[in-house]
Image 1 (tube, rainbow, N blue to C red):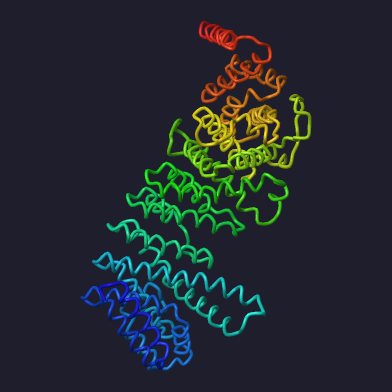
Image 2: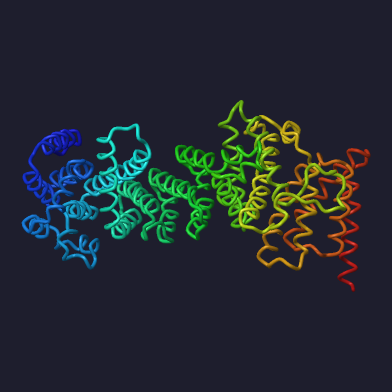
Length: 569
């Protein structure tokens, strides 16, 4: 029994035999299996937890359980009660109903025996116990969903309906009783166990339990403690544990797609993903980087690329949650990017992820870049209420758009912030890749032209952001968000300013110079404003043939003179 292969054969044989035993004899053997989990021999404990995991997934076991409860005989009640009421785990599951012999069941006894092995002295037993929980929970989650599908279908046979739906319902009901204590145990074991294999297995079981809680709307669903623990585990020394924690956070976010409400837990999950999962694209382990890129593509890139065509309709119809989740995660990247140059957080991680995505895309890189730029362009003008069909040269008249009624509605604000966040990272990536001849096999200029976007929109967007920021009707928090978005916009202009139409470049350059001379800009906007001015100067000089350095010297000296006058006065 020391070998996994031998135990597997014994388990298979035991399940086959138990299926054909009378109900009472089965109950006696199950008590023996439960006692095996307390054996001093480690191989016996291993076999016990494996058998329990298999038994709990069998239809005949749950039918016996149901029949026992329906009979409600005193013998059966005493038989069960004498076995499991001494377990603190079962007492926690039963609460005030611990004396109710109709609730104290064999299933709780088996779950209690399994739960007790999570703290076994041997790592192999702890790992196998967690994996047994994984098997049971996956069976519950799959069969519950299958049962719902079967109930809506008249074509499937009644026998299939009764087995799948019954197992799923029975498992779910019992798991919900022990949910709070089981989630607590799995979380603590995942955080504190000294063996990486145990931590990883507990993360998988823990994720399945949280998914069940979310589906069944139970009180032991995702909490701040769960999110904090998963964030810590994303930095675990073990590669397998880091990948498991990252996958758990990703799946928990995907679970929120079907929710009609945006809870504080959903917001915390998105922030946690942005600042603990995405930075794994810079991990030292290649397999960890690969998984992080997969999660990044699934949560962020795929929904955004899908918006390249018919964005307005897709955002206004049902099933649009995944689009808004992508933009909210990107907006939280911008919110948390407080340290310039941080490569493992914020826009630095986003840029690294895009670079690696371009490398993986190979010959499809040009198509990917085109779709990204088109999607970001459309979301940028929608979230600022800019009419892209109006004259791009008319900067003096306000424009209206789809979201003009409420610029600071949660999803609209997230789209605006997220669009400029990813556009900054994308332009940086294209410029750097072109200069280093790595990553994208397309230059920024080629990408902009192939996407057929009008670069005047960056100037229009900057003007709109300034108008909103100067309004007296918005809160300080919204002003701070607009300032951060304006900074991203200016950084984008510093990269694509040479592609902006000449008339727009001259007008915007004049406005930026006036803002600098009037000392009306926040300090954190001044560096990016100067970078944008340099880009516009190059654009203007390329058309007039003047020397860029001389022109820059001219307006720089004018600014310095203005500063001296202000200091002297």
